Image (cartoon, rainbow, N blue to C red):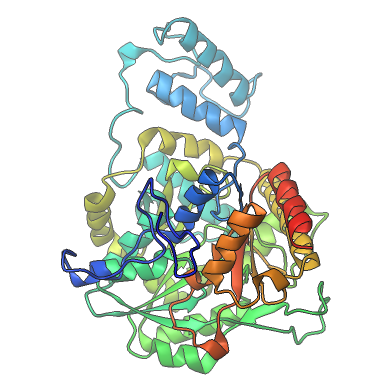
Length: 499
């Protein structure tokens, strides 16, 4: 067992994972000294090993929508798209729903070991297996067209065509290909901290120089309702600090709604960021994977009772849509995935919307890094993109309810909670919890894991700047995306063993 100085275990002997990587003469390149395995995923392995409730890694433990799973199963078993052999020629006006016809077709496939007759709504092996083989590296053409339509549907962004989209191996690879497309060794990449650990690691992997701009908690100034009078209600950045960081930079990475703080950047902040990108000739790379989890400016949804209206109007206000900032069209790359919103993080299906002049370079890099995203998942993603507005509204309300429930419980046992405006994380201060006084964030996280039975992530993992004793990091991140049963058990343990 690998231990810290105080004897707290910091790694898993089964995997060799550790919280830090030290330099040694065997590393093949200078950059490899800085790149380390994910601490978040390490905490997940420790949660499994010690049978703790896993609130560390941000993946749901609930299933994707049934119709999306049906589409995947049909694609794998039949090898061909369902609609290609649909005698009706219309998937929207038939007497039975697409879901019902998929289930019937799947039943025939299973009963006949895949050898079905060529009847409407079914497929045959003789027709050839497409979906279990390579797709074009940039992704299926119908999927890329559907993604382009997605931006028109949710953002009224009609500047995206199928040729502006590349399907990637999740948002992780979408971001990696974007950074490699834009940057050369030594280029500056501006990152807001706290950040997801992925951003600086990818910068270091490609020899880019990460430059950090710190988000700091602050009180609202517009007299909006505060859900917790004792703590901050927003995270903000210093405009002068950002301006200084942008000078001479090549790339800025923007994640909104933000992991880990839950911050949703305001329209004014987005306009300011875009103005600096234009002024300093900086490319903007966005990470939009929590786009359907936006709860309103003060953590409260202003359209709670109008799901469809909220879905189609509110989201336009918290992402950078290039057509709203015309000079950003040629300098913005939008990275996204279905993993979080479809509860399908294991599918590794993402995409990037890129300017036309970067398309060939981006696709060449993507081809060498990943070749392609899994073809059956690409096909099933078509069903995800057809989900009704009510699905995305219900998703938002589900996570808002869970974030609120977990946040209230954490506050009750002494954590300082800033209500998130979006995403499904709580980035909380622990210096008010007596049991954790004097501990580093790593020690506090391990204490909760081993002695309380709840796994979270140390706050140090989300910062690039060094903390001195007077400004010591006192944050932990909890993920509220788990099932209600898991959250209820975590809340029970926290109240039983801390209060």
